[in-house]
Image (cartoon, rainbow, N blue to C red):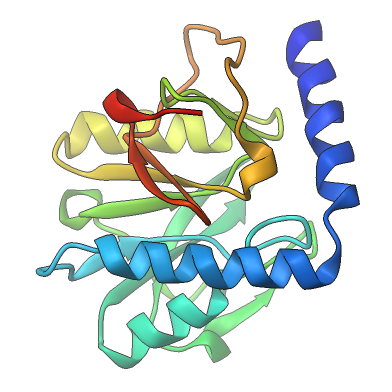
Length: 193
């Protein structure tokens, strides 16, 4: 879809203009905002290891592991990915795209136990639409998760410059329930950008 390609390019240009100091400051704010809104009874979380142009949520992941929260991260398996549970960041290795991911011997995630998923994206809009990288990995994962565990929530994680008014969508595109930016957590129904 040409509109998605154009929007991806525009957001990537915005991200390229975000200097390291601002990127680090916004990442710290995002981690603080996530922590403010985590459920009190959180025990199982799916998250991601950030790529260079994504918010750095590693301090949050380390803190949650220290609290013995069950943490699952994506692992590339063929053309898709599955979430695997880790107990320590030393259980990660470089995957085919250079991203740290759980080793193959880590346990597969039981989708019925998931309470919350932190979802990266290229862009998000106030309706909870997400523009991904174009491979559909998170769309497929969120569809499977919601089929097995409708109570699980998905929060998009984004820098301010990744918020747009509207994202072109297709039938298979999965939405998030809220987006967390440096400004705070905005639920889909109350988002104002």
